[in-house]
Image (cartoon, rainbow, N blue to C red; front, side, top):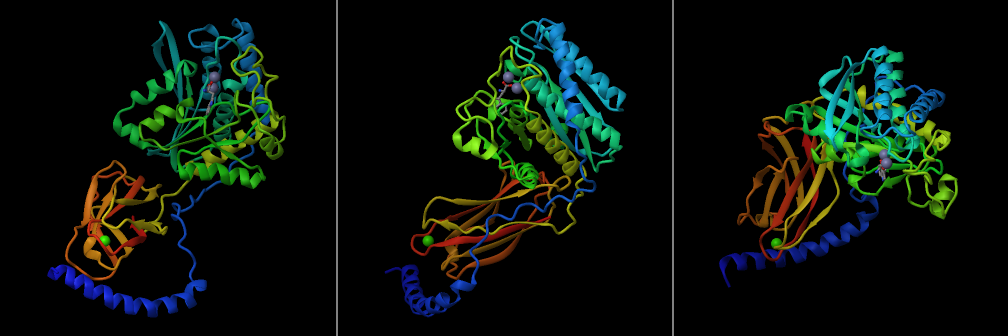
Length: 447
Ligand code: DTR
Ligand code: ZN
Ligand code: ZN
Ligand code: CA
């Protein structure tokens, strides 16, 4: 038997004796120990001002205008048609009058000129942008009042409420109305791809609102980002309205190009041509066995094709998100982002990871980033440990060795100054030695 194996054998018999003693003690203490919690979310944002109620009558007035525009322009507001440009002109005029800095971005698609409208609210830290967007185009077959006049009017009225309040956010607020979404998110893709990398990384959150007034409504929250998902779920739980994750797939609206660019995305959706189930009708009211919007992409998607309660609730949720995110104050130095969930480490097997989502931190991570690691393992020499930054860069914290000691409870220091602070960081652990097995107990980053 090799010296190494012999030492392990001795350690194992010592461990068996002490394990029996420990087991008895653990049984007594087990009722006192709380099971390890899941990852601790980023610190709750501290909103400096409460969001106002958005008058749904104002939102409906915008929808009436968009309906009139469609009626006057061949029954639609589609890309490349006169009704779309008239819609953009309507929204832009409202924002110019309210003090926004507006930019009309043109592009060509299917040999027709398309338009994006970007509106910046002057002020706020321009290195931290909170953005809300909605596509303004309809299909050619109808006026597109729910799809997507509802989202367009909802963010427009929220933007006007920001102006009425004279809000002075800590972060920079930006709103976008996209062209040619119905042809495959053409306008929003053009916008994102046109951003310099530095400008892209300044967008801390993009919130998308596409169909938020469906006549047989559901309340769906995009589940792409924990913080933004939680923000909307918190709002709706305050109303006593249950929500469901929006699971129709990432590529279904204008948040897709933002997500593909690594920007945190969230949003709300009240349903399209899918059928409301009996359980959903019990939860939300309305009619089961019928589509959330029977007029999806049809000529009957008119101003009569709106559920006012859904539009009201959804638009108030938009305002809540804009006010909360827009007035967040940066977390104080020494903010801890921790994951306390146990993760089993397979013996001499594949690496495992545990994640923490860092948000609200300005700029890059520090040159001396403390990484606190707690691992339960009877032979820590088996373990190789890495820190993985949001962009995938890997930093070696510990190599394997012949260290036969128990457990790891160490704070490593990493020069992570080239890494953007915000995003999903991972601890990656691999057990590379046969026998002896353990688990990640918790780990944390301190900014
Ligand atoms: N594709 C959108 C409607 C749509 C369908 N599923 C989802 C999910 C999330 C947002 C939007 C949608 C359109 O027709 O504009
Ligand atoms: Zn559509
Ligand atoms: Zn849409
Ligand atoms: Ca092992």
